[in-house]
Each structure stands twice: as C-alpha cells, then as structure tokens.
Length: 461
Image 1 (cartoon, rainbow, N blue to C red):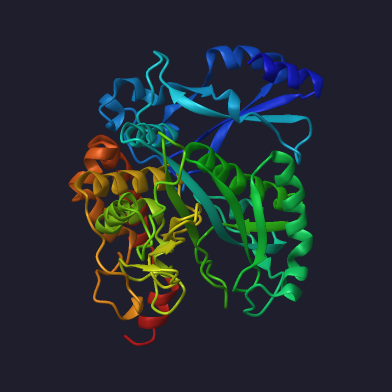
Image 2 (cartoon, rainbow, N blue to C red):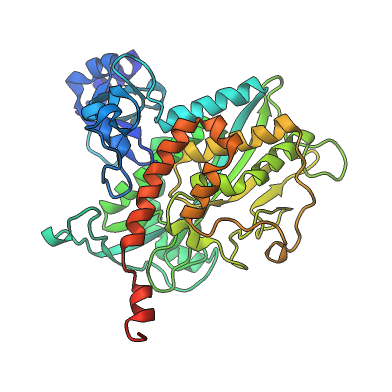
C-alpha cells in the first residue's frame, strides 16, 4: 500500500480507478480522489451488489428486493453494498487518461467474507485446486478483434436505451488478406496508438497482426501464470476500447458483427501446466512419437469430455455461436489434432520443446477470462484424476464423426446444467447463478423479431 501511495504522490495523480470484473468480464468501478485513496485501500470501496445481478443489457435479472435477493443470500437483499478490495500488485498508471491510476479489486461482503460470484475469486479457487494436484496453470493469449472508424457515434437521446444504439462505422481496410503488410499499414495508425499505450501499461505484448477479414486485427500476449494472464486480458480489452474511442475509432470484441463481409473473431487460448516441484512444463513428453506427456494427454481428455458444457464459458454470448462453421478455421466438432487449425484443441510442440501446449480454438474474444480459465482447469483436472485418454488425433476434423459443438448459447447452457463434474467443481450455486443470467439473455433474444425472420416470412406468407 505504501508503494502505491508513494507513486501517486511522485507522479502527481489526481484520481485512482478502483475496478472489478463483473460476471460478463467487463470492468466496473469508481474513481477515487487521490486524497481518499489511502482510506479506500484500507477499508475497500462500496458498490451496489445489484451489479452482480445484471445481464449484458444492464437489466437486473434477480429480484434483489425480495428475501435473499433471489440468490438465497441476505447480504445481497435490497441491493446492499459489497466491497471492492484492491489487489495492490495490479496497480497501473493509465497512459491515456490524465493523471489517473487504476487498480483491480476482489469482492468482499462488509463482513470480510468473499463474494461467491466474484469471477476472479472463481479462478483463484480453480488455481488452488490445481496447486493441490502439483501444477500451476500457464496461459498465452491470441485475440482477434475489429477496429473501425466511427462515422456516427449515435449519441442522440433517441439512441439511448438498454442497450443503446451502437455507432455507425466505416472500415480501415478492405479485402481478405491474412498478414498482408499493405493492409496492416492501413490499420497501423490505430494499432500504433494501441502499441504505445499498452506497452506503457506493462502488458506482455508479443505481436500485432493483420487478421483475415476487413478491418480485423490480432494481438498476442506472452504466456503468464493463470491469474496474471486473465488480468492482462481484462485490462487489454478495456484499454483497447478506451484508447481507440478517444481517437475516433471503435474497437469491438464482439465475435461476428452484423456488417457486410466481416469475418468472425476468435480467442485462441494457449495453455499448459507447470510442475510445482521443478518448474518445468508438465506437458512435454519424453523421447518418442507422443505429442504430449501422460499428464498432458489426461488434461486434453478432460477438455474434450467436458467441451460442450464448458462452451458456456468460452463462448458466453448468443453471437459467438455464429462462428462455429465447417471449413472456416473455427472448430465445429469436439476434436483434437497435431498442429491442425480445424480442430477444437490443437496440440503444439513435442519431445524436447519447452513450449509444448494445448491451443483451445473454441473461445470468443468477449469471454470472461476468469471463467474461461477456471472451466479449462476444472475440465482438465477431471481428466487428470481419472487418467482419461483423448483417443486418436483427427486429421480431417470437418469430416469427423465426433460430437458437434453446441449450436447456440441455449444448447451450451443445457449441457452445463447436466455436467455433474463441472457443476461440482465450480459449485452448483455459482452455475445456477450464471445460467440464470444467461437464460435471461436468451429469453430477451427470443422475443425479438430479427431481420432474417422479416425477410423470410413477411412477403412469403
């Protein structure tokens, strides 16, 4: 705490943003005047607990003014306060905001008890379980997203709502030219703004790339241990949107925007385990033809067995399931393979390669990283405990007879509700809470009349 206060004084900061990650992986919080930061660090910062009861439109799903607030928890009745408790190791100075610091927080009730719906806490618990098995979790991030130029921000009163109107945008580049240097140069003014600011934040940047579709980019972040990597993803997404918006650009991590000719964006999660005993990659096989060690195979098998249920966390939006298409560089089935971009789980490395890892290609860039990572850990741990085997690698994944991935969020939630192992690991109360919020999203969606329906039926019938 002393180090933070000293940096605030030395750098002449005026405010510090105390932020927490909500159930959707979005940052919420309050800006605290510099003179009050010491008290906030000591006592926490209060916020209305009803924020934990909202869907993606910011509509409250739970009856927070009823007994137990719909959670069975008297602490949450009446939208009572919960506390943001700062994690001092996450403190940053935001390079794009004037004399502003930022710190990430965990959630506590006023009694000091952890809030069970704090998704950062959910990942902490998963990492603790993994530690008991003798491993640490390492994750590298490969994130696709779109950057557009804002033509009309849609800020008229009639554009307000739950949710409001999205901005009208134009492209920075056209065509479908993966890794094109010319296309990258068209996007470079926006991406250079990002690079400068993200580097000042201390994020572990690896590369900036021109992705396949028009106005689409990819950023990769170096591998870090679990909690640090999830924190980096949250800060990366939020910073990207804030930085670019200030310069007239709109960055979106929505999987498949409803714009002509754009491509879907994915989030490829590169993951491995490290032995607590010696600090070495536990997935590296001994000499031979196997791509993974026994521990790696068991972990892989667990990911496969629970893939349909864990999709509710890797792909938590209705829109994300529009990406699962055959022959699309996105997975369609529950498969694994060696260096094959059509499978769900791509195994990279092998004997003697310290970077041996499993790349999960199922995720969308809007996923809450704490829940994505936690679900992967619990699925893999189940495979490790049972010494499960993944079966043979797929060479033609789109022709495989393997199970299909869910075609919708509704289908993924149904799989999650019946996956006893994943429910037990995450806690039945947390899974019920999460599914209730997501079910409300699905219900709202099903009440809307889409353009497809209008085009299909209005003239026909």
